[in-house]
Length: 212
Image (cartoon, rainbow, N blue to C red; front, side, top):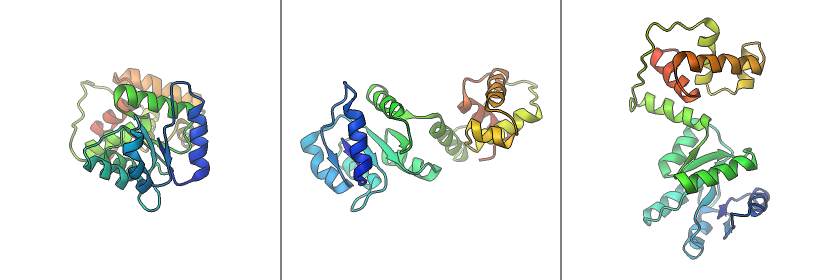
């Protein structure tokens, strides 16, 4: 089920998803109130819901649904990419979060992941969650890095990763190519002994390079 007050976006998303054989659109709504009134009859397996809507927004609609002790998986799709909005959606019980400029392939991937695994958060959202948990002292990053010494470029890269910048944005700030940035990132992952940018962020927080 697709819930969004912008008709063009809602209809466009429905058209895109309708072309995917394993997906079936069972209904739509233009605000949270309409969604709640239709939910029981439609009983969707997953809900794709906008955050900002008139009458009743996505966050409040999701929380009201949870009050009924009904918990359908929900992928929140929003125009906002700031930390406070992501965390607000997750606290309300969203199983995933994407921005409205996401590629159709990513939306499809997110739906598959939520149905199969129960959640979908891309790397940027995962970084936000790690930083928020570290800020609240819910995790204490630990690494056995010995006497590891990072050079100036590696330290600068870590700081920018902590700012949630894309590779292109980091490349612009560091006056080099995206390919060079990816190369430094790959070598840094190997050097520190982590698996991805989330591990780099945790290391950066623990070492004091990234301030939360």
